[in-house]
Length: 395
Image (cartoon, rainbow, N blue to C red; front, side, top):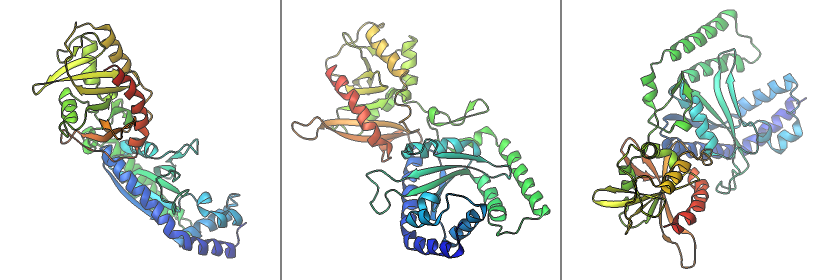
């Protein structure tokens, strides 16, 4: 069992490392700020390194409980491997029903594969409610000074946060003094009031969150938490022409094109016309003709049409590729809730097969595209490049 002297040595060592954990928590906060913005999910973010005195109290409690993990040698070697919340980040959502979608954003922003079950959903009898996720900073882009640090991300609602702080200070930090019966009853009353209030939050209040994609949103009461936005043919043309003639193609993911593609499959759309002699479609916007092709992985490519002509309405090849792409799910685990697009340009160098790519995100609020700097873009580029050769070879 840890002695008071050993705890003091651990704390002294931690004080020397505290700046590292502050930097790690700040890195996670900044990354999540970009990811939540791209996901159109409003949150309140904060980060911190655990105060040395709070760590001291935690070590004392664990020692008193006889926790076998809290041994002197491993704590001195790497306190963060034992106390995984010395670096912490908190994401507070406005509505409890957005807690799970927010947790999904965190999971997709960081690789959590080192732990098969990196998140914990807490619904304690005391009333404490939050989802905890452990984020290991193991990627190459992480600065060497914070690499291999672990940051615990707490996702909770603003109402739960108020209650959690009360419950935490009264029960978790009671320093050996048990709360009286009156205090306990007051906590229980507040937990009940919290439940009663959020269950009566009208559904329109959830629209505090800007529209996002349905796979990112969990369901509540049989209805989507957030309404999915779908791209239109106008959005595709606007995206390709974002920089004028500088880029040759726009690649998007077909899960954002269901509103365009499904009517074609059901033969009730006059906007898309199949191309004569190839599995593709043509559409016209602002006096210009564009070609739309689909890849089975779930990627669609928009280019400026050249000499292509419209073919028969029922083109089995075009309809087959469209149907396969619309039902593709292989990319879903990688995709954020944001609607992403990649502008594809010329080769970066002679003899290279790498093309200039500009990642974008469609913002439903302004109905236009903007630069996307989220961490998901590099992961998706390789998947997009796998479809690139096939789409170019086919024209």
